[in-house]
Image (tube, rainbow, N blue to C red):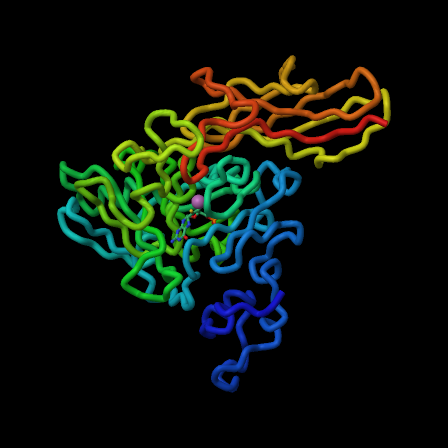
Length: 406
Ligand SMILES: Nc1nc2c(c(=O)[nH]1)N[C@H]1C(S)=C(S)[C@@H](COP(=O)(O)O)O[C@H]1N2
Ligand SMILES: [Mo]
């Protein structure tokens, strides 16, 4: 993998972050010099990712997992997908990092330092499922433009931070507040500082939930650079695009936030079902809120070969946006019949749930194991594809693995 331009343009501060240690003689390093350690770098080393992660795009970085890499109950950093819309911030000045809460609906704009946020407000840790709205996009027909995610843009990590609600109460919010919108420190691909690559948000009711936090830590450590260091919003159960990385400013709005990727076809789907390929008028598009019910078989890896007479143990995770998963089933006959899996309760609201089953196969041959989750409203995953939409969002069709009994 060739050295990437963002590495070459990085400042020393972020080099240290990328390397994980200080460059001891950094003052002696010639200007413009790229240390060998970074010249050798590939994205897997740079971001501490498993070599089996799949790079979909390198400008901006978009990297997805494979199902078997997501087998852990809590996803380790090495298997967490990367979705950048712009260029990662080039320099993080921790001492001077601030968060400003502004917008039409704050009583008075307020700015906090990181240390103030950490000391002033109580900290909480939650396991929260984040899935990119475009996960599964690759299956839609007619195809949608954008990163061709298959199944790997989802994970559930431990996030530690403070409640957004507590901060908003400290700031003072006007009665007309309806929405929040985030502003991160990443750069637009054009490098034009006046443009934002993404600035999304959610209704104030989502901001007020216990689990909506301003996070400092992911899986007990400082958030890795690529995942939003040093501060990030986490809004579990909603498209992960709501969870703004490198958070510097949060606007409390008296209108639906109108930042980059809040309008047009971005993170919006037809309010009513449409035929594949149909043109949809702007006013007929609705913003995606809670994500639909979905599941993933994380063990065994697809292509497993099993000897005759042995039962197959399968396991995986299921999630349902703001809802809980109430039933989990598998099929070995292309959906003709279904059997139940054991499904655990979530460790907290908005965490994914773990399922397992022991499967016996009637005879030798090729099988597909399909998994199907049902949410607490009784809504199940579609077997093949959900309704088509212009940007290929919300594909929650059943995950399948191939198994051969020899
Ligand atoms: N500032 C900022 N926040 C962002 C993004 C971004 O490009 N910039 N991408 C969003 C999208 S579309 C997704 S799916 C998630 C991806 O988070 P991850 O890279 O930590 O997995 O971050 C969201 N937050
Ligand atoms: Mo996303």
